[in-house]
Length: 545
Length: 84
Image 1 (cartoon, helix red, strand yellow):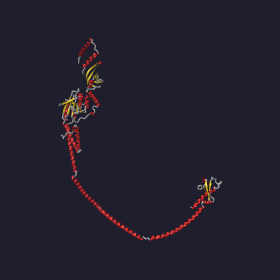
Image 2 (cartoon, chains in turn blue, green):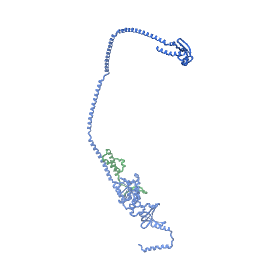
Image 3 (cartoon, chains in turn green, blue):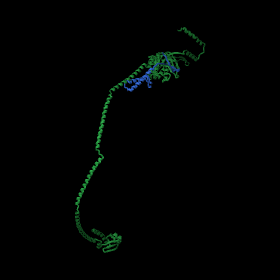
Image 4 (cartoon, helix red, strand yellow):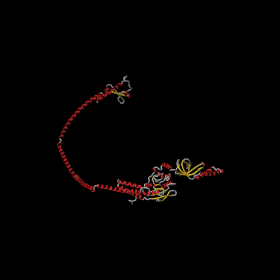
C-alpha cells in the first residue's frame, strides 16, 4: 500500500533529524526524563483502548487492587484493576477467561514496564459468557438462594401488583392488557432501565423499594401483594442485567413474592432462579398473578345456588320425613279414648272398693260393738255373781254350824262324871297299897343299912393306927403334930414327938445313921410303922368305900 | 341477603378464604347430615360469605399508577400511568 519510495522517503526524512540531533551532539537525557516522555506519549496515545485477551494469573492484593495479565498466543501485557473499578466489574477476573477489557495504558518507570489499567471488563464471546453465568449460578445456588424451600406461594387474589419494568414498550402494555382481561386490579409500575449501564442497580433498588413500603397500607403508596419483574426478549447480552448478582440477591431477599418474567420462554436468567415463580413471558406472568374474575363470579354464584338449593332440599327432606312420621302417628283421639276408658274403669273400681271397704269395717265395728258390755251391765253382772256367791257362802256356813251343833250335842250326851269317879276310887285304892309297900320296903332297907354300918365300923376299928401302935409300932411327929414319914424330915425337924398306943413322948433327933450297920434303939421301929401305916390306911379306906 | 351487614370476621377474610369456606359450607349442607338449626346458621353464614366474595369481585377495577421516585431513588408517590 505504501511504495518503497514512500518508505524510503519517510525513513530519509526522519533520518536527517536524528542524525542532526546526533550530529548536533544534543545533550543526553536522563533516564527519568526519557521515561517520563515515554509515559506521556503512551498515556496520550492509548488513553482509551479495548483489548481482547485471556486472563492469566489474576491476583487480588490486600489493598483491594487486582493484578493480572492479558495474553494471547504470542504476547502478554500486564494489567491492573484499581479497587474502585474492581467493585464495579460485572465479570470477576478468572484464570483463562477471555474478556474484552476497556482501559488506558500507562507505564511504570521504576521497572521499565507498561501496563493497561482496566476500568471495565466484559466477557468475550457467548461461550465465555455462558460459562461465567453457569459459574455464578452454581455459586449462588451453593449459598441456597435458589432453594425450593425459599419459594413462597402467590396470593390467590392480590389487591395490588407491583411491576418492575420499563414504563414504555410492549411489555407493560401486554401485562396490563392481560390483567384487565382477567381481573382488573391496582397496578403499581416501578420504572426501570432493563438494559445497559445501571439497569441492574435500578431493578435491584426497585425490588428493595417495594419491600420497603409500609405493609399496613398507611403510606402514600400501598405495598403490593406480589411483584412482577419483567422484560421483553433479547440477546443474552441484553438480558445481562437480570443475571447480575445484585438483582439475584435483591429478588431472593424480597419479602413480597416475586414473579420473574424476563425474555422469552427459552431465555433463562439467574433472576428466574431466585424468583418465587418463573413466567415464560410477561403475559404469562399476568395470567399467573390473578384468577379470571368472571370464573370467580361464576364460582361464587354457583356456590350461592348450591347453598340455597341444599338448604331448600334439606328443609324439604326434613318436611317429608316429618310428614311421614306424622302419618305413622296414631290419631290422638284413639289414644285418648283408650285412656278415658281405662280411667272410667279405674274410677268405678275405686268407688266400689271404697264402699266395700267401709262396709267391711262397719261390720267389724258392729261385731266388736256387740261384744262390748256397758259398765253398768258389767257391774250388775258382777253384783249378781257376787249375790250368788254370798248366798252359797251363807248356806255353807249354816250347814257347817248345824253340823258342829249336832256333833256337840252328841258329844254332850256322851259326856258323864261316872268314869271320873270310878277312876278316883281306883286310884285311892292303888295309893293305899303303894303306901304300905313303900313302908315295908323302907323298913327293910333301913335294917340292911344298919347291919352294914355296924360291920364297917368294926372293920374300921380293926385297921386304925392305934391298932398298929398296939402291936408295938410308934408314930413320929414334929412339934406341930405333922407326921414325919422319913429320915430327912425327921433330921430337919430336930425335935419330935413319938406317939405310942398309950401316950406320947418327946424326943430329939441327933442325925442320920448308916443303913443297917447299927440301928438306933428308937429309929428303926419309928420308921417301920410309918411305912406300914400308909399301906394299912390305904387298904382300910378302900374297903370302907 | 345483600342488605344484611356482613359480620366483621367475614369482612376480614381474604377472597380466597371466604370462597373456600363457602365451598365447605355448601358441601356440608349437600351432605344432608346436618341438624336443621345448624343448617340455617350455616346458610346464613354462607350467604354472607357469598356476598363478601361478590362485593370483592365487584370492586375489581383497573388502576394503573407509576411510582415517582425521590432523588435518592426511593418511592415517593404515584402518578397515573397511561400506556395506551
